[in-house]
Image (cartoon, rainbow, N blue to C red; front, side):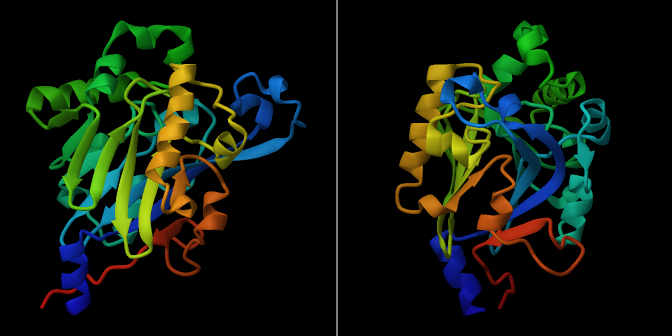
Length: 279
């Protein structure tokens, strides 16, 4: 089909935002030093997402969510297992060739065993951090999972872990940007779509309010680095700021309306469209 050829030549893809989990919390729990801002406290949801970048000829999964066990241990609600959500999208995890891990926290780096044939891509600085003794410290221990770290080490031993620094173009129109801040190797992904360039901020920006009010998330490895990451996200999204996808904000589903029908109704939102049919 002509549309599919044009999209492939332009490096365009569609982005599918999948909500797989959730929890309830207070603003004072999610923002660093919240009293500094003289804002009223109140409930705020935290949604858990992973992302799919699908072009005319390949699929890249961005983050792999948390496992049922890791989520339950932390009181998180699992709405659908990521592998099951992918199957509803017509994607078999065994056929996925590339998985990007934006950072090593339990809710982004679980379930990598579900992708036995994929190359796993993450920032060198992130791998070095999560495999160091630092993650045993109390401020970092909660957000990492020993099984996930063991899986990443095994992938490295198998030659299936691709590490990068600074910037990596995975494919035309699909680029990884190491921004740091939240974690040493926190990565943002930009994707060219028919609607403009989407910026998958992951946990460089958990909530849109972080950007709007300059309010870092409560858990950061580097506060100045977090501010620099905010600036970098805004720089990357200069032409399409409305296409920033925050990492945990329930507002994502208001800015990008989820599908109304099908097995992922209310859970999956799409940005950009491609024609995957072949001539």
